[in-house]
Amino acid sequence: MSGRGARDADVIVVGAGPAGSSTAFFLAERSADVLLLDRARFPRDKVCSEYLSPEASRILEAMGALEKVETAGAARLAGMMVRAPSGESFRGHFAAAHGFRGFRDTGLALRRTVLDSILLDQARAAGARVREDTRVVDLVRDDHGRVGGVVVANDEGRRDTITARLVIGADGLRSIVSRRLGLARRSRWPSRIALVAHYAGVAGMGEVGEMHVDRRGYLGLAPVGDGLINVAIVVPVSRAKELAGARAEFFEEWIDERPHLRDRFAGARQVTPVRATGPFASAVRRAWAPGAAVVGDAADFFDPFTGEGIYSAMRGGEMLSEFALESLASGSGDAPLAAYDRARREEFGGKWRLERLVGTAVAFPRMMNRVASVLSRRKDLADLLVGAAGDFVPPAEVLRLAHLRLLLAPGR
Image (cartoon, rainbow, N blue to C red):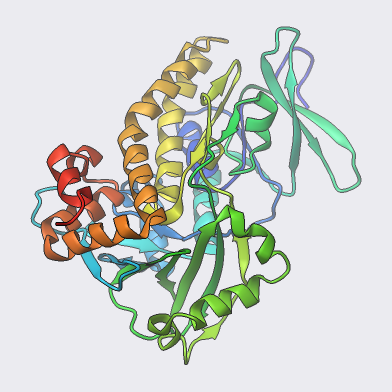
């Protein structure tokens, strides 16, 4: 602990996933004294689609992590195939003729056990101090309600206070920081949960990720290196009760009941247990409070269909670091934190609108069938949509009125 009147760190970052490690990295490399806390001990696994968009490679490169991620065996994804409930499908590629280019022409996918450890090591190498096995249970506030640190607890229930000039919550969907700040709210619809496992030997996997939309949810497939396939089943949150205690059975039945999937899994082997995450469709009223800010899934997460999670977490950390440094330089000024909130809405607003449009289409089979029918014939539009999901095509290109009319107007 620091002496009286001092702080234990300039910034405490709660959560050492992609959002927290990127925030800590970009702060520490600019000489901020950063303390990065996580309740787990790394390497640790995380339920996730494990997909990084082409534009995520730019941030990995800035963190000195891209070569390490590639060397670790990350799979390369050239685009995405989407199958509608009708059985019709379309395919879009990141490298296309629309004139937009990502940092790379492929996306990446890698197990979170590996990715998160790489990113944490980069934050540590930049100068961030890291404390694992450290569970944050509350925030410290002054008489005016301003956040000035965190309260941590060990397994025996002992509590300690750690102080800082700024606290950043990067602690995921069920963020303790967001909840203690009173920022969290949950969108009502469409809210979904996901079941995820890894398989080896899934037949027919190619150079693209796959999304198989069903009348009762969807299934995603993505290679993540070492011959493993990330298999995610996403269903409405209303089905949570029927999954309780029977995740593995539900997972197997979902695949077995669909012939186009059953045949491909006939010789496959499940490698990791089925685990759950969600519900999704959550967001905060604002991403800051006096002395604190939130980033990544702690700030918002809508749905994994468009695969924005890891990129938006790292990009959010990169953005927040600039405003956090301004806040530190101004003493106790919160104007930079409010500016961060405005900047993130401008940065991600178009993607949020696109995500909600896609989420709505997925929830209505007739609409999804219509979209697939159009995009199966219009490769140019399919490439635009997949490029927007890849974070390098401006969402406004997809959301043009003429395109929406073509995609969503009832067929004649």
